Each structure stands twice: as C-alpha cells, then as structure tokens.
Image (cartoon, one colour):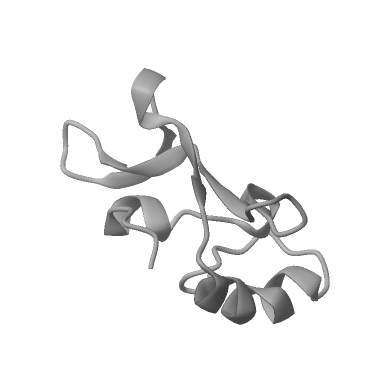
Length: 80
C-alpha cells in the first residue's frame, strides 16, 4: 500500500509513523543491506533514498492499533 520495496517496508518501526500529521506519513530511512560476505544487516538509507511518504486511509486504519499500543522497538511489518 506504500510503494516501498520489501527491504524498506520490513524495517519500519512505530517511531517512523506519524498518523497525526495531514496526510499521515511514514519515514523511510533504513533498509536491509548485504555485506561483503552476503550477510544481511539493517543499515541507513543514503541521500535521496531517505524520504517521507503519505499513507492511504485504508493503511492508516490498519496501523492505528499498532501505533496506539504500548511502546515497542519492533518492525511494523513482521513484529520482530
């Protein structure tokens, strides 16, 4: 629902989401990356890759219970 890549969407944390601004937004500021030995790690997006995108109303409805819940450091997408 956002047009982001899987490697970006699966790194979104509750702190990256702002449902109170108009329109509601999510910050894309990190992604899964691969090191020289083909191991994955969470790394920052660089330059133009960092962006803030608007969220559609259907996605906002799905995110309200997650964002309103207790503070957590989990990814929104896979709960881990």
